[in-house]
Image (cartoon, rainbow, N blue to C red):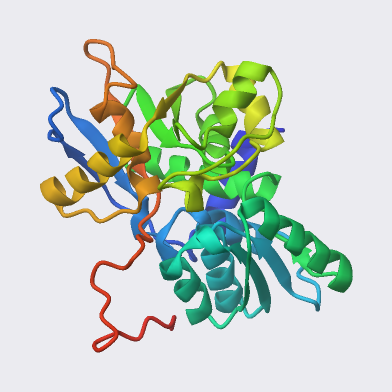
Length: 317
């Protein structure tokens, strides 16, 4: 796969439909070096997932039966948002662990939402059954070329904005995001995978030499809780010898609080996972190594400002 060409094409294709999210360089979090942050949690529907969703819909004919997607929450919200923006029907399956914030966000788009017992794998099975029954187009959350290319546009955009880092730390769930990074950067920058200790499908696959099933749990499981890493991501990470580190839930929570305390950046646990690797020492940069961190999602649960008596209208316009 010529990922540079695929991602460049996706970048042009979706530019009018996504937010060019800002970047900022800070020196805080108790670290002795500056960190460049990209604030992708400010993307449509609260995460990077909108990029892959728009690229898929704009590069493929959509059948009359519409779209179907399985999601831990963010992918479903992104597909539902993109479908509404482009005039398509969407059926979204999420597991119970998605959390009320993401469930409400999907419902606000008008998509047909079904909450299923279990984890992401159970939602995926239900979505695959719907695809077979109806002929709807399945939009995979991470293991599809159009999805990976769409997520890769984030890194093309970041370089256009003047990314000045030797190393980029990225949280990993199913692997679509880091797959896009590896496809775009090739060997020009070091990419470090960061996973929760209780949801580490990429780490397990790299150790086993092939994708393998893992148990998932923890505070970031509704975004990073893929039971099995995607084949596209595994191949790219294996070939690149991508370093992989794991962080405990306590470190993720500490990073989440530090982002709010120091910079008033409110992100979900998955959005703080990459920073956690620096704060807890799971990844130690070399002297003079310039590092960047992606804040990938902001759909925190429960919503910190929610109040049933004063609930704002969150419907999309």
